[in-house]
Every structure is written in C-alpha cells, then in structure tokens.
Length: 156
Ligand code: IDP
Ligand code: MG
Image (tube, rainbow, N blue to C red):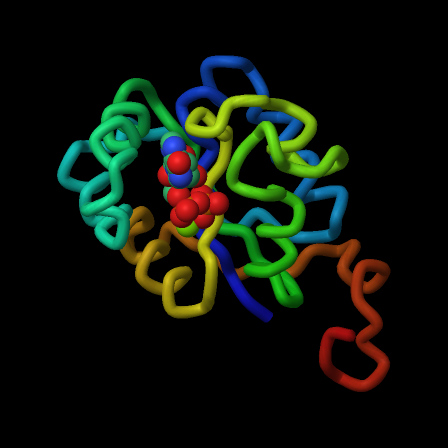
C-alpha cells in the first residue's frame, strides 16, 4: 500500500475540473486520505520543485504554481504512486494518451493540470511538505471488501 501526493494545479481549479479529476481516482478504487485547497507560496514551490531549479522552464513553473489556488490530495491504495502516474498520463498535454487526465483535459505542455509523486521517496518528501501532522487520515472504507481481494489477509 502506498500514498501519493497529488496536486490539482491552478489550471485544474480555475477550469472547474477538480471533481472530474478526483472522480478518476475514486473510480479506480484509490482512496482520498487527505485533501485541501491552498495557495502555494514561492518558498513552498521552490522546495517542491527543487530538482528542476536549473531547468529553463523553472521560473515559469513557479509563477504558474503560485498564481492561483491548488487542491492538494493524498491518494492511497495498492501501488498508488505508479497507478496515479498512469492515470495522469505523460507530462505534456499535447503528447498524453487519450483516456488519461492530461490526455483528456488539456493540450498545453506547461499548464498540465496535475502533479503526482514519481516514487516512494518523493511521495514521502512531498506529503510532508504539503500536509501537517494529522491531515492525512487512515480509515477503512466499507466498500473495500469489493475493491480488494482480502482472502489471503493482505490486499490483492
Ligand atoms: P511531471 O509533472 O510529469 O513529473 P516533470 O518533468 O517533473 O514532469 O516537470 C514538472 C512540471 O514542470 C511539469 O508537470 C510541467 O508543469 C513543467 N514542465 C516540464 N517540462 C516542461 C517544459 O518543457 N516546458 C514547460 N513546462 C514544463
Ligand atoms: Mg516530476
């Protein structure tokens, strides 16, 4: 079981796509275990995107991410980090496959609607950046008995 940090970027919030994007995760069987609307500060954007600081698109990326509120989500489930990346699609909206979030809802290469952690280490780091203690919940869903095969004692 994994938890991924997802950000619905300013374009997703402004375009009224939050609900439709969250629905994709819920329909897949993943669980929303944290959610909040917030405005990202330049300092937080810099920490979050520290690996991209030398890239030519970095200044524009920070400007975009701090320009308007975002929704941050903690998404939990079996292999959630890779599952979320697959649901998101390729980085550029113009290249992302149809059926993915980026492929279906956008065509821009920089306004690409959504961020998702790219591995377990990044997920742990990013969840700690965006969520305080007690903001990511652990709770059972009644329907999980039909989302996962629990006959062996672990989720399959
Ligand atoms: P990812 O979001 O799919 O993991 P990264 O390569 O980590 O993609 O880039 C982080 C973000 O920076 C992208 O989601 C996108 O918003 C922006 N970005 C990446 N490459 C470019 C580019 O070539 N031009 C403009 N923006 C870019
Ligand atoms: Mg990335």
